[in-house]
Amino acid sequence: MRHRFFKCILAVLFCAGAVGVIHPTDALAQEKRGRNRGARPSRDREDKRDMPADAEKKFNDLQEQAKKIGPWDQEAQTIHQAHVNVFQMNGWTSESDQYALSLLQQVTNISPWNPKQREETFLNGVQTRLNLSAMQRQLVADEMRRESMQIAMKHMGSMFPVVMEIAQTRAEQKPFTPEQIQKWSQNLKPIMDDAMAALQRTSKKLEATMSEDQRQKLKTDLDAVVRRHNDVEKMVQKWQAGQWNPTEWGLDNDPIHAAAMAEYRAKVAQTNAKVAVATANLASSPNINTANETEWRKYVQWFVAYYTCDERQVSQAEGILKSCEKEAADYLRSRGKEIEQAEARRSTADSDAKKALVDAELTRLRNPSARSSNGSKSD
Image (cartoon, rainbow, N blue to C red; front, side):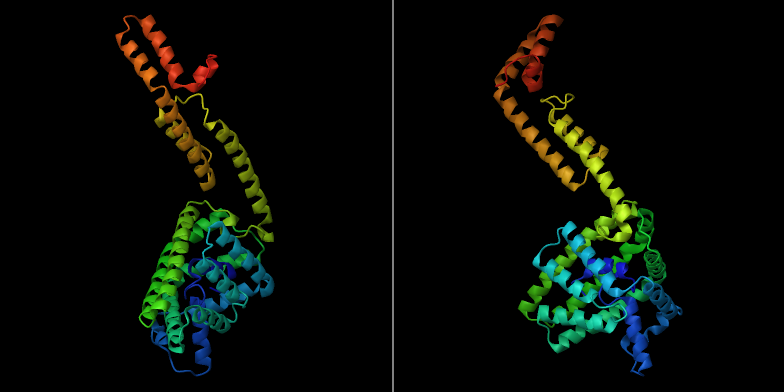
């Protein structure tokens, strides 16, 4: 849509394909220009009866609201940094990812009030990337417009209020909140799914006209698109649960989100400090017996849930667990014969006192910390 952040989100999802560069309202704008020039109706306009009657008014209202946000050059710089941050945060670093990021930024440099120039820039980039002929380029352009118009017709009712609220929030210099993102993201998945399906349909039609070299390059780029799409689907699930922070939209350095970022960073630092202390104690928890590795795993699961660990912290905890499990297995193998002998003596012990003595020995053999605390030497 017209507003830059909604464009940013869609473009992040589909930035190597058509959807996300030519948006439904861009298609509407092109249709409007065609009518003003007296152009021949296109295939899309034959279906104009399916477009909501107030679509053009909504488009104009959104355009006027978006103009209140500020100079486009300044907005584009914020978007560029947001794109870079999102790609880095999610590990979108392959050659195809970097191509998509570069093309996305070329398009973003152009004001959204110049949809025709945006389209030309995108098509030029794709044509060069895939070595498309003039006919193949036109096929991409036609399918982009048609698919964008269909998405607009299907989702206008749910898309427009969200995009308008995003534009209003930004124009008022207010930060986005997790509650807003939670509300906005409720209807995002169907739009994402339709956009992905549209991209795949367009790609299939294009592939039928391609050489083997072109098809291989297209497949590589589409695989990268799918990976990004799947990653964002996971993010959307978090957003729908009210778990959002500005870094997930790349707004780390956005002045409007400075206070929200300071609060988020303070919370992260506090959590990291608690996790660091708990992690340091994880391997030597006094409640864990060397012989019972299942208890270790339960403890790690509790630890991860209690401290709401992120992926890095989960990976760190799992690494410690595996190291402890290996150390325990090595230790128990080295003491296996002694443990077997002690267990045999316990089974033949004829008094509680003798059983207690053997139990103490088994505890010492199975738990290195018990050996140390009793003053025994460890091997």
